[in-house]
Image 1 (cartoon, rainbow, N blue to C red):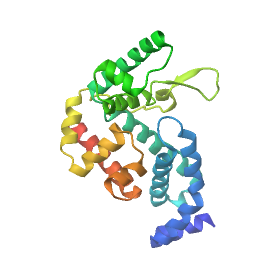
Image 2: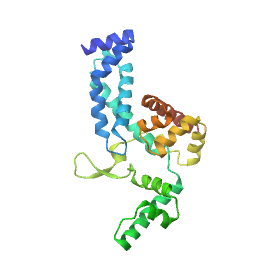
Image 3: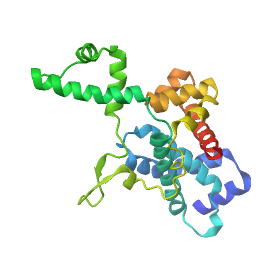
Image 4: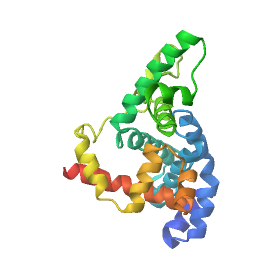
Length: 240
């Protein structure tokens, strides 16, 4: 029956039929999104990426090749999720000042804790370091972000591995672009709305839903624009 549905869609390109197929296989997107959740990215964002990959997979799937759709779509969705992790972790860097301040906050917190026996609050840290409380909060958020270099248990639970091990990249196209200048130049060529998206999603670490509220658009719009922006930056960096 599924094969016949795919054949019908291949012939008619009926959107209602495509949506019917997508609903039938959304459980695959849900399972894979849950598998990668808890690694510094919200489940809702991963589910959105997985769902879009599912729809794209339906468009590309050929039912006459004799392959089960689940067999075809599972690595397709997994690949999209891995690409999403790499794009978020490597494409945009935090400002150096905030990164340095984050380290200073950790050091000062340890000193105050050792002296007073109490963990300092934001106001105390701001006074000790001569910074605004808002700046302290931003730097502390950077310090709490999960790094892809942090250690996690592997599936066999016998050893620890970094998230880069869990999400391998055999063809890393960003290794050649260590200089931030190329990235900043590429970002400056984006539209004002696209720049705001980059700021909200990759610097402020907001979810797609929160970003949508800030931009006064739908979450689907944010998801599509995000992928478009990342593709623009990839192509610009490849040219560099």
